[in-house]
Image (cartoon, rainbow, N blue to C red; front, side, top):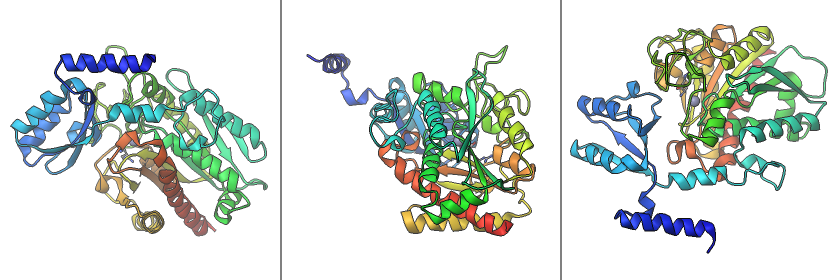
Length: 423
Ligand code: ARG
Ligand code: ZN
């Protein structure tokens, strides 16, 4: 008997002995809505426990009456927690029950040679493969790319920016895009890689791409949180933060999108190192954030557009997230994301919500987009890519291309409009 089959039979046998079904031995994601304040508090409590991981919202403190909650629950606690929810008359349903299968699908086909076979960009890649891909891409396009080491992570993994430029002389404008601030949002680094490939492939073939690369430099950081990303491949698929260790605390990691110096650690972030939205010991305490801010500060004059790519929930956001107050050019940015969202709806039949971060989701201080905005990069955006929760962070590889195509349409729409304005 093949070893894998044998293993499956043994696991099933173990299940039968324990009077359960094979398929129920899986982690699940529940969709839950609190109808009353008591339910909301109870749900905050449940989602703070170790056997669960909150997918949406980012922290228990954001759970309120009538906000949809996506809660990942370890197999060993599923029956206990569903019984508790039933006892308290919660309205809930199972959102995902084949989590293990989806995770397997996401890590399949990742060979040490990412160039083997087609579809490189419709797969998820390990950290090593991402480094390799970026490296060979820069070697294959010496005339249009430059690899820039901007710093390293807490665990000393390199932070590489790939600079894309058209075949022309120097220009004075630039755009920045970072991916993978949050470790578990795998579609994000996949999009940065896809963007690089697409731009280099269609330069001088597609007019919009040619305009973008001829009129500005594009700096891309495909993976801002390499340590966390690696950890999601090796140990915990649901990890969000980086992996920095702090003396005196047994909890690991800082939320890099709460660590920027933008109303740092006020309402919407946490000073508890064990929280998923922990802001760190002080603003820019994390080497990953230091590397990005140092680079952007020294390129402040040229960088006009800032994009940060996250998932999931399909939203096109702009500052502020640290206050409900509107930015001076609120209307201008609102019209840009509105146009981008319309384009996605028309061409890809997908709905994206849009608006300022604080009004569209929740207060989230210390974010990269708000920091970039306050540095004077007045076209600053955070995108939340697919999906709406059907698969959440476990978006299957066959949806990568659709997620990337529509996100590209949005980036392109905004970038071209801004270039027009800057003429
Ligand atoms: N969902 C992401 C987060 O919790 C983005 C929220 C928007 N916040 C921001 N500063 N852009 O970090
Ligand atoms: Zn995120």
